[in-house]
Amino acid sequence: MHRVLACEQCGAELTASGVRTVRCPYCASPSVVERPAAAERTDPRFVVAFTGDASGARGSLDRWLGSRHWFADPKLRRAREARAGERVIEDLRGIYVPAYLYSAVAHADYSASIAEHYHEKEERTKPDGTTETRTITRTEYRLLSGRHVSYVTDVVVSASRGLSHRELAAIEPYDFRALRRYDAALVSGWLAEEFARSFDECQTASRREALDEVGARLRRFMPGDGFSDLDWHAQISWESLDPVFVPVWMFAVRYRDDRPPLRVAINGQTGRIAGKVPLSWPRVVAALIVLAAIALAVWWGLR
Amino acid sequence: MTPCARCDSPLEAGDLRCAVCALTVPVEAAPAPVERARILRCTWCNAAVEFDPAHQAPACAFCRSVMTIEQPHDPVETARAYVAFGVPRELATSAAKSWLARRGWFAPATLHDEAVLESLTPVYWPAWLVDARAHVTWTADSDAGSRRSKWAPHAGETDVRFDRIVVPASRGLSEREAEALAPHYDLDDTRVLADADVQVEGFDAQRSAARAIVGEAITERARTAIEDEIPGSRYRNVHVACLVEALTTDRVALPAWVLAYRFRGAPYRAIVHGQRHDVVIGTSPIDWGKVARVAGIVLAAVAVIALIYFGRR
Image (cartoon, rainbow over all chains, first blue to last red):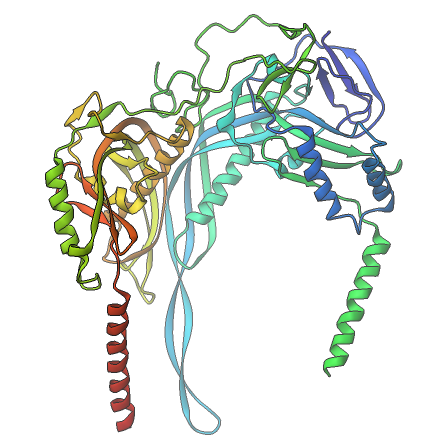
């Protein structure tokens, strides 16, 4: 009963107990083949469960596409209208996307030039002989060095082949207080992708993201009216990395054979939505010309 | 259970991750036998079932019966100890009355005589008692060592111990009321059971939400605690970053008297501390006529001064 569906287009491997699909939910490619499950596979340790059903996701998808309808590629608009007529059925799928959840302790040593403003009065003689005083804001730079300690938690990196790390980041955050221990019952009836990226690869990516977070925190940590030359080095310790399934609604439409599919991802827990709508350039240019014409008319009218 | 290996905070049964530092809790039992495929069947009609987000559990597509599975263990908490009442009803009544008499200048002159005491209710309000260690790093601007600018940057690090910090968990009391009452309790004078006929306000927050509130409160206290470390007499732009360790939380119920009174039809309330009758906090009516008269007098005085000043120039 357990089998793997492999997409020949994007390479995503999905496990599906009790689900049939003829299209890859990530790239809408029809070349999905069935394979026996590999013997060695990673099981997630935790699951964040879906919290809404497909109709809720469908509603927010329709609103999102509707607000971008005007400038969208005409083929996509036609696909959308076909969807409204319910001729296309298998387009929005809930998938448990494999990811790694990371946390660590970060000790950072930093040094920076901190800007402190001060005011000076300046007297100036005007051309007509009178003097005026004005206040000028000047800046002095002071060197500061020190340490910054923090826990970096809830870092998530995608271990999926179908959904890139950037696409997953666009629909984060997930509320990990609702984390559950993995149980096959939690994903029964839903598509789940196999872990496609290795532990080491994801650990490296997580560490990079954690260091980025430390950098962002350090920039907020600086006192003064501004700073420059922030130089820091962080030591990461106590790392933990756990495989986890996160819920994502994927909407993928192939509206043209020569273009990559339109993909929209929706956070299955919070409903946050992200994607790119292919634009119809003639329409965008036409709109810009109309706008320019209005601006010109207003300008002429005011003159 | 053994405490968290990374931050030494106690873990509770059902925790998947440490609430303080988010380290994954190791599975104590031996790993379950690897099961490659598992078909779930409805116990009623034997059809295959699928996970239903509406029920947060697998449900049968045909007969909609819901299977129960392990839910995230996130209970609503209850108080472990009740701090004893030290102020009896008569004392609370007289404390409330004398508080009404001392309502200051802008209160109506007849407040004490006209206020109708509607009820004086004893309540227990919930709070967390928190112990923790924190390694705090900080930066700030202060006037120490300043040159041309008034400010010079400073940084430092220090260890702070938090010993039985009271973090209010009440929704009934306002933040201002809870902060005013909290420092004055004798936390050693506790009972295991609540006094009879005293209303007990429950902990409204689930464990996970409670921990988030406690964590924020600790960071806020750390900010206050390091203010002594900043050199100089004035400071600004205080930033703190800390590693909280060995955070333990205890839940207590704290006693108070809630006074509801009416003045000319409008409701007001005051809280009398359950152990110290001299600590009273509340709202009282304002005589807007008086305020307007005072404002008028002040404005007139300013106008006269301005007239004199500009008249002389």
